[in-house]
Image (cartoon, rainbow, N blue to C red; front, side):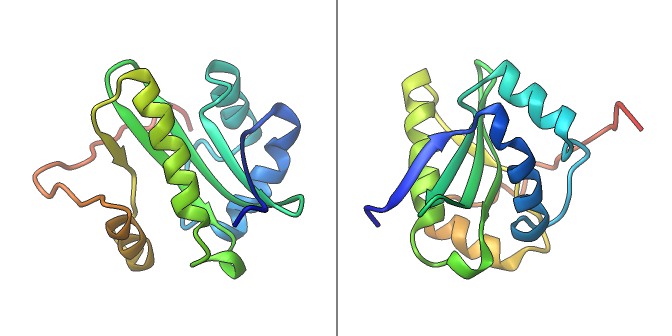
Length: 141
């Protein structure tokens, strides 16, 4: 896997990232638009982590730290590139980032219906906390 390149996204990557998520990510988010991703990268330039192989975008993860908690979003690997260690490499980069901030625990947003993702997250050492529920309120239409 020495040909895998892990790096932070830059503004020039954002359209490619959005297109990638449409094919590789499960579900959509209210923030899956150019403005939302630009805000993320503008606020925290190293939060959106990309994996590339031979110049092709093959995976992403958002590793957000709010000063209190370490949050993981949008772990996505190209369908044809799954089970090649790309997700594990992305999570290792995210966890290294968190440790550098003094983070103590990472939490991940994982769709309840995405059984394939459940297996990947468990293999990476994550487990659901059934006593918590995510409560949301859209702030924009």
